[in-house]
Amino acid sequence: MERREKQRIERAERVKRRERQRNYSDKDDDFFDSLPDCLLIHILSYLPFRDSIITSTLSRRWRHLWTLNPFDFPKSNDLPTAVVVNLNQGSAVNTIDFHPSQQTLLLVGTNVGDITIWKVGRRERLVSRNFNVWNVRECSMALQALLASDYTASVNRVTWSPDGALFGVAYSKHIVQIYSYHGGNDLRNHLEIDAHIGKVSDLGFSHPNRQLCIITCGEDKNIKVWDAVTGNKLYTFKGHEAPVYSVIPHHMENIQFVFSADINGRIKAWLYDNLGSRVDYDAPGQSCTTMAYSADGTRLFSCGTSEGGESYLAEWNESEGGIKHVYNGLWKQSVGVVQFDTMKNRFLATGDEFQIKFWDMDDVNILTTTDAMGGLPASPCIRFNKEGILLAVSTRENGIKILANADGLQLLRSIGNCAVDNSRG
Image (cartoon, helix red, strand yellow):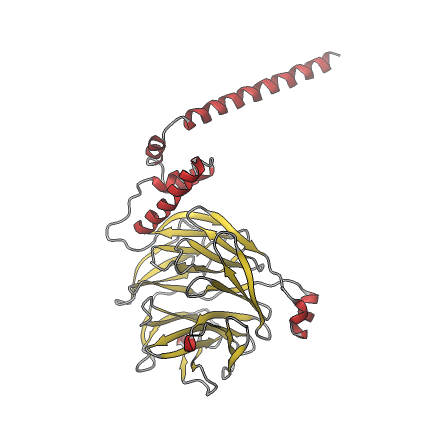
């Protein structure tokens, strides 16, 4: 009896202690909730930058307060190097792309076939889709057999159409899916194309003859052009002797064409006809290569990694043919291909050796590097928004970091203020 009485008393004491702790916690919450925003922001100004961002997880009220904190940026620093947002995707990020006009909408594709649209200023997952073939019966017998044995796929590429009304998804198994996006969580199926035998490596949008088209390439060594309205195949470009890794449609004056690069570093250029490639280049180091134009479309760059792990970044002279500059300073890669993107017409960024390197396009020099507070993979995915004031970077922990310059932070602040106002109303 004495033992039971003792246990009863101990349980009662534990309950009282928990109640006292809860009351103290509630009083602390009431105290901070009673403070005006200006005072809370003043308190945040004494915290390290990283810690001020962490406070956004405390409650709904704290979610956007950090964006009102007056951060100090280095003078004349136009580069987005400050980590201002962390997004938890939940699976490894393979590819990302900012919306062409809605500057804070980010499209993401993952290694398990998921696609997500994020509103990065609010850390809000607007819409998400898992890998799913819309009409298996319409697929080729080869794809049906593949899906019957293994109904999984990864996303190799996501990209918005030029006006942002559509986006395309290239999968590791045969197909390309095109979605139409109508804002918010309104995402609709538009086209599903059984495009290539094996994986689809890359895709893009173009306007030959004022007709919106989809360009795809794949493991079958072919490049194909599809009508973006009907899904009908318009052209097939053949000539690569290895799987095609990347494509980039472009136009110069009145000429529309497509550059393609295979895994052995062979680069070709195609007009929208069936007369074969017009240009043949070898990328430095015969490396697996991606290509991109500067924002104004006047300068062509390539970046690739050879089988031996040597990485090369180069600018091409389109008028005379051949390489104009080779950028020195990339590290050897143990895995993956160096990712890169261009910012406005002055800078470009590469993701390699667990960090981001910013380059001056004209001086061919590294301006600065950042590890984005750590956690980057050896070769992170990177993408600027259209204005070059935000930079999205993939992380090792299945997430995405958003880096900003002063203008980018101001953009996120304006969105954060709207969110705070809406939550109060």
